[in-house]
Image (cartoon, rainbow, N blue to C red):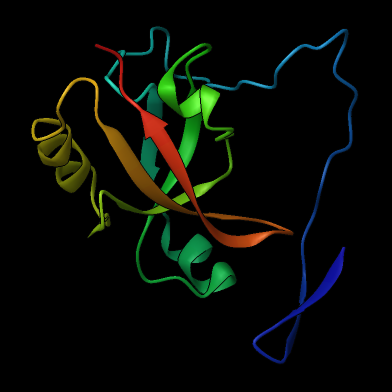
Length: 130
């Protein structure tokens, strides 16, 4: 797919598929045998140098997994989304994310700034369980 980002032409590859009967798309890294659950239901990884170059991002974590029926899933987050900030705090490293998780209060609504291909940046609200 050819796109123009920041005035520069770029090529991206995409795979098109079909979900069956309301099925939600979820992926996990091939080497991740068991996903460790967290309060948001997100599996994240740091962007590689190539991903940062291609997306022209210097910050953010890539969503690799969204736990079904989690706050992240209910807010519509999907694998491939880049999380730029959580609760108005920029997220660049997994250690930032892990420290931030410790500060979140049960029952609160947490704003998450995310970036999705084809849509751009937007905020979603994650409501944490009681």
